[in-house]
Image (cartoon, rainbow, N blue to C red; front, side, top):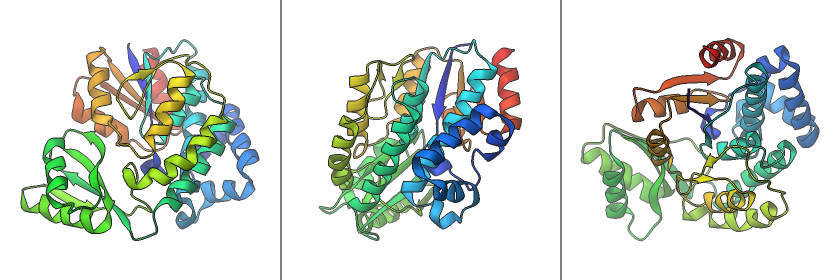
Length: 312
């Protein structure tokens, strides 16, 4: 079965993510032991006990989701040793998880880098200046037109092209609010402001990108065991140099997830396996193809189901 393994981003986090797998499998526990060693015991408390307000800080959410995703990946790979992905991919932050899984960067380097990425993204735009909103029931080109009609010289773009009929916009708060009202007026099925701490994946994140570039330059990137389809251009990368360049560009560039899924469909993918907290990416994949087998791994129950599906 030709499969792609996909890794979730920040929106999938929840208090306690990865704890059940860690308590059940030594390999998952080792991932979290390393994460807590790298980032500190206080990080352990935040990820597994909360409060949710602390976990919601980008600098905590990003390494938390990364650790939970890699814990799930390593346990799954141990249980299904013959598993050979055709591709890997990750939504936003999840691209780091995909690169760890592909053997391009170490878990420790990824944890330290995504924590700094989170801090830089948080600092790039003062609280209240930027915003994001989800537009449901509108196609990408229509959303793009709404943004162009309402931005008024401000920043407002489609930042996450997630799936047919699901696009997230980002930019200056006033421009995003105007776009939401315009979208409702032209027939958007649902348009809601998102409770996020910063306007990710738009040009307002340029300071974060510039700050992250020297951080990434210090990280060792090896060539990939399996190709990772990058967010910025929806095309696979196989060398370490390509992987680093795509991560640098990703910070202030839109996430082209719909195009990523369409590319994978063209490659004959038969199954999409979401590895990490939540099942958001499964839902997005369903919007692209009803023919795909959809699998997710985030706890013991879903792991056992995934093992059966992948070995069946």
